[in-house]
Image (cartoon, helix red, strand yellow):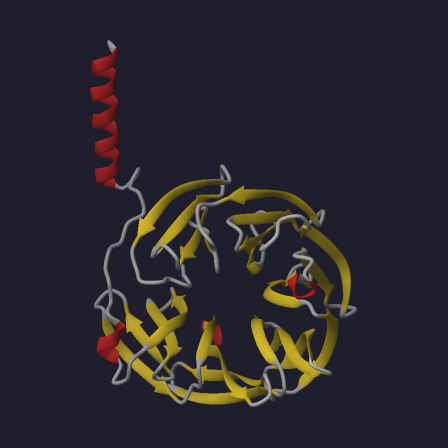
Length: 332
């Protein structure tokens, strides 16, 4: 078979496979305009989550301060729940028909009183309001078996004209909202993301030391049995303007992925607790999501109005999904 015939043959095979979905590239299937569901201007829909059991999308954002529940198959609004102040993150617990949403309220003097709302998806009502006094809640996860919430907070303080930040890891009783314990992570550190491994009973926290102008990026590993930092993995100490934005745990491969705003994804082995490598990406990732079925990472790029796809088998950039206006989060 000569070169030209080989080219035609391979082109036909690729086209045929794409038709049956074997070789289909990621693409936009539909667009849902959220403005049609909002009487006010829904700005910055930061929070999104997907409930596969009910095929529902949960979206919340600044502007109208409510949770939208959407059926993606019909693109229709299923329901809405009001009374959520400045929502920015959603965590689902479908087994208990609960949705946890983080919102915050600015307090004069560079402080925040953050709230975690517990919403019953059957009754469509707010059942719990857990207030984090005098602290900025940056991220949280749910321990479903123990009814606990693990979170990372940052408290601002001005002393003699100098701004200081105090980072903490907190454990909250999800039933009554009481903070059970607080582990101080350090002064002038900025924690940005948290992941929970229930089998190892460990917490992984991405931490930035840029407030001390060191630009050092680390992963703190917290032992939940002792409530202490059992290990610290340093990712970067040389690249200026680097900033870890979030972390995600892939329990299948015992791998923790950390998004770095300086155009890279770090990954470490959670068994050896050592850095395995990094993935250079053509974007400034603010968040990341893992697609377990396709073994891919999705990185919303709010600068270029697109989402970057990374192949986890090869640890290489795969393709780009061009869509959206300043995408900041993705749900799988």
